[in-house]
Image (cartoon, rainbow, N blue to C red):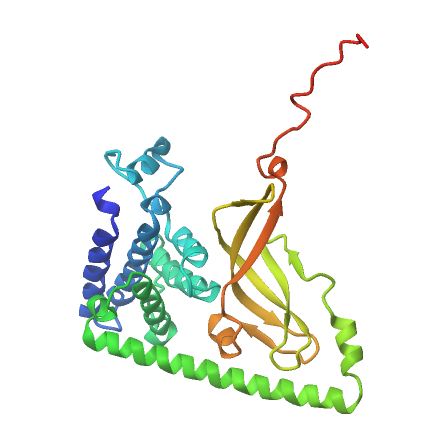
Length: 310
C-alpha cells in the first residue's frame, strides 16, 4: 500500500507543484501540471481518512480494494478525478460544491488536452483558474495539517494566501450589500403591515425535509428578518449508533450549502457567504429507530406455525 499512503501522495503533489511553477504561465505545462497537482492532492486528503477511498472498485476484480488494506497488487488503480472531488465535498469540511465544480473545470481542460485534438489551453488565462487552484490547495493542505509553502513554495504560498484573503473580502462585501438590500425590504414590509402575512404565506411546511437529490432542507431563522427560511444541507457522515431506553439513536452530520428566505429574499450560497451570517456550522440531525427497524428484522419470521391443535 506504499503508493497510496498520505505521505507518498503528498510528496508526489509537491513534486508536481514544483513542475507547475517551473513552466511559463502562458504555456500549456503550467495549467496541465496544476491539474495533476490538484488530483494527487485530493487523493492525499482522501487517503488520510483511509486509502480505500481512492481505490477503483470496478477494475481488477476488487484487488484495488484489497490493496488499500495491504494486500499486494501488481498494478493498483485509483478512482478518476471527478470522483475524488465529489468525495471531498462529503468528507473534507470546507470543501464545497463550488470547489468541486471549479476542480472539475480544471480537470476537464486537462482531459481535453490529453485525450482529444482540441487545444483548450490556447488563451487559457491564469485568471480563469489560478485563484480556484490556490483556494483548493489551501483547503486541502489545511486538512492535511501541512504548510502551504511546502507545497507551493514561499512566494506562491504568499500569493495564494493573499488571493484567498482578497476573495474572502470580496465575498464579505457582496454579502453585506445583499444583507443591506434585504433589510430595506424588511423595513418596507413592516411599514406596509405585510410582514406577518408574508411570513405565514412562506412558512415551510415541515421543520426538516429530505430531498430526492440527497440533500435536506431545515427550517432556519433568517439572520435578517427572523422569519423561517430554508437551509440546504448535504449529508457528510453518521456517528456510531447509540442505544438508550431500548431505542437506537444515530447522529447524522450535515454541512450547510445554501440558505433562502422568501420573506426578505435573502439568498446565500457556499460556505464563505453563509459564514458571514453565522450559518456555516455543521448541523447534527438525530434519527430515532426501533431495533427491529434499524436491523431490518422480520418479527414474524420466527412465529411458530399453527398446527390446528387448539
